[in-house]
Image (cartoon, rainbow, N blue to C red):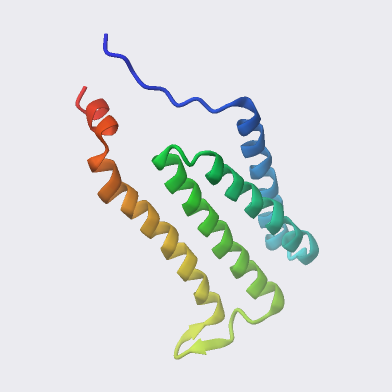
Length: 134
């Protein structure tokens, strides 16, 4: 039987990831019910933990790419929330684009990171190629 490579997440990392989800949900619930202080406050632990998770997984290209994309997702999402809370989301930035549309920039950066991973890195990764051919 061929040996299968496993990626194990240490328990202390898993606990941090689970706490990250709690902060993320609190941020988004606060956004949904327009509870500005908690929504803005939750940006910091949500974003900081996302950065820490990405850093701790830096030895795994797949995990790093996905976690950096999450950092950009949270950044875009947080900017969008702040633009709505502050009331400048519908103001025109340029032509028909509003300030809310600027959130597309970090969203697209995250997509580009994942596109790089899936279209360039993963097809060339020897370990992935060996595992996929079994």
